[in-house]
Length: 326
Image (cartoon, rainbow, N blue to C red; front, side, top):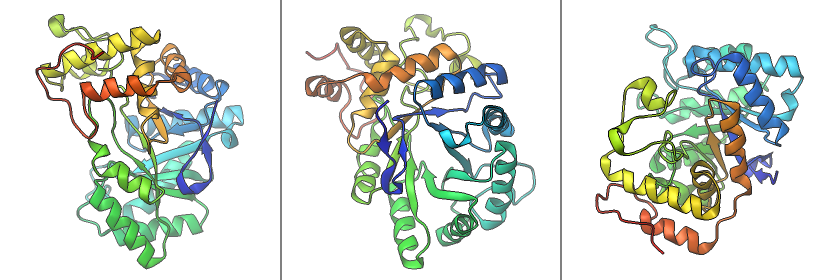
């Protein structure tokens, strides 16, 4: 495994980060432990969760695994705060009241004395960013959090947070976690340039676009695979115009002799400014396939062919997409 430096933190992490949103939901504790084992055995040292994933069960499963295997110091552990945790009016958001309560709950479920990377899961229009940063700064001084991060922040809010932190002399967001994949490249417009300019690491989520780039969906009848997000939710949130792109990615993957999922994740890791890609496997077989993405090398000609399918900074909506450009 070739490790990458996580922005200005100096910490080295695997380019594949294990996302655990399925743990405690579609993936039970036994399978989750096997996935964690496979990730670490392959050299992966980055694990991401959130306090809202399956009502905290994801954090609890990871905590049990860490305590039973004595592997706490072998992984860089990331979790998040923001989402609603109860019907109490204040039990959500990015204000001090909520953050202080939730960090203690996460530490208890994770069975650890520190959170390596603590994400603000989404922006909060009701809470000034200075209050959020001061609360995080206190947690760092207390040793409960090592580094602070954001998730799915627009560029202007990243900039605001950055310069407010500079003015207040608090900790800053060292990492941003945005969505990014071949279908949705919008962060290349402003978010990635900001992160590159100011040394913010970028760990992207949804590299497979909820499975659309995994080579598992077929156009005929829109029958989604058993256990997929679309089957479990009854939703199909992508327009018909994206089918040609999905099929074109399948063809490119075939040319390179790899699965569509490996190709799609590997492509993300070749984009300047992307530090890591978060995978969200449901099974051991999926994590083993996804981990192979770090070894896939794509040349400039291949990257240019993908650009012709969907240009940098764009969300694919083109109904006229044709075959894979040669």
